[in-house]
Length: 174
Image (spheres, one colour):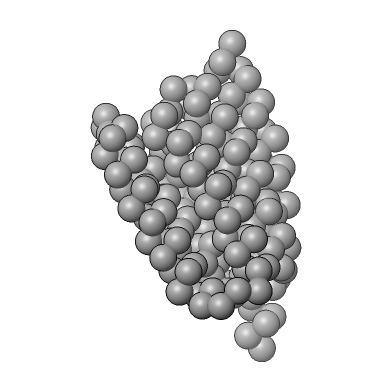
């Protein structure tokens, strides 16, 4: 039963992920990432993919914090943001070591660090490039975890990112 529920959650994630990368605004992309990460975490948890589940929950929390930090009018924002990101990278590394069982847990950890790099981007084009590499690596994790609809999600997310890059990023360079 968990397998079936996980696949349905993956389908919902697909819709959210595809829509979110099409926004021009970094804020809207981040909101889509928050929702996607929570849904993917649920899917991985249902399938026994603990490393992917906890990483996606932590990524959602991190994105919420970054989202509100970006909106706040505080002194030394960039320094505080950098300190926060260093703390999250450390949490991802330590967490990966704690849950490590096989190579797929390392892949999930690398994806977490790529996610950190993605959400600090101020330019949506750079964010999309990192998200593209991240999606490719998650496909490998999805296959190993049997999260088949997440393969669909990440595969279509790749296609959507490519479309957004052509539609938005190529035009902005001209």
